[in-house]
Length: 332
Image (cartoon, rainbow, N blue to C red):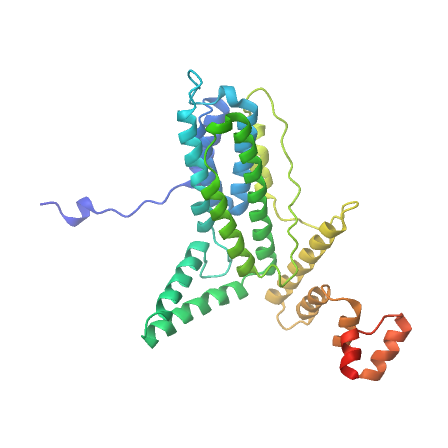
């Protein structure tokens, strides 16, 4: 009889950097197999998170539209079944990959899979009478919420924007596949439904409506297609993944909403830095206040910072700002 050590082994971790390197090597030098795009998207999701998936989808639809006749498996007698199966597998993996990515950057790291599990556990406990189980479920939810509190707003902002980029690239991929395969294209309905559910969860978790986060997609830089898959074609999305966070405030002409979002993002990064490195300093507090105030009209901001009614009326008169009609009615 074999000793336990002879038939039980530690589970091996996947070397995603190796998968990334070999997939790129094979795509650029040896083969244009559709399976490699699936593996590359999975590798990039583990290495670069939401941004990696977005760039993986971008690379995929660029390659499909540019090299459709050269891809493997080859099309024989107009039969697309082999390609259909591989492409369906590529898109079917997207929801689970997205839900496996950490949505917090503070220990313990949580993903949407963890979040769904916590909600399921809480709902089960509500249907039962055991107080202990309910308390334990609530404690788990509180730990999740605390991890989000400890996660910088800049990380949450960037994660949400990267997810929006996934949706954008997904829409492009669907259009490309419909154009190439017509009625033989993969089924998108289930993936659309799951992505919509994920979107709703992220909006709720990151409180995007409460903080006034606009759904503005980052500019997508598309590499120029050549007659064959080149290292540059693949490396360009990869380089963009590694530099997703804006380094400074760079206003863009005729795009105030995007400029405003970027400015608030930079302020939040500065506030997060001082909160961690100088917790005793008022800088972080004042910047957080500034970010909150940025969502208020002038008359509401004045009402918050000037509590005495007479000076407030004087400021309103001086600035030519109408007093809030609700306040006037309440005074009457």
